[in-house]
Image (cartoon, helix red, strand yellow):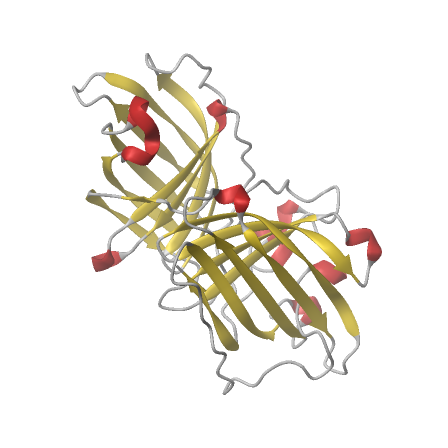
Length: 327
């Protein structure tokens, strides 16, 4: 996996009077086979319109997970100069979500630990910022049907094993797994910000290989509302081929962030066949791209990485049927 390149642009009016019009640049050089043991560096520069420095910082990459054209990189700052930001930078964590859009344009999103935002390994927000110059290149893991760690897949075992009922998840009734020929009608409100996924297939995780999975995620932010004013919910089920229930839980979405064709939603379980899951956090990532992909993390055990509002893993699962929309 690789995330490389240098690109930037000018912050828009949504950044408020303090930062609107400021030029920013991002340089990333990260590579690795194991998401928790990559190599590489990052370098970020934020200036005033007159060229004077607001903040410049760099450091080493600590995690990397890339699939198709989306990659999430986290790291730790080890050098910084920030005359315009009177906070501690050294030792703070950061997360960068990079979208390699090719001719449609690259994007990047960020989470800054020096502003107090929590950062968990291989998790980031949506790539909300369209770059105006430069280029990012994302080379993702091949055929990433099952994701790392909680999703069960290549490399990411260091995040802790999940209980069986939370590894991969789908159909709400025996035999509910739709055939690959099924066409799901996906529609979304023409206004606001929307994500919608109705999809499924079979698990590629060795422990659950061939088990039917089904996911439904639907969320919307009305025009003028913010990420925490989202309305929506999710339903995840996982059965054995003979119909036995492995997992069946649902809940409400509590935060939604969208950048281009990538969305990130977090939520909380409100109903489950396992009552101990009620109140537990979950996160989903959605990519509406060359190949639709869904990612997920469950905060069901004390060993799981913390799940933070509007942050999730890189979308990794390519469904056998159904699809998704990010608008």
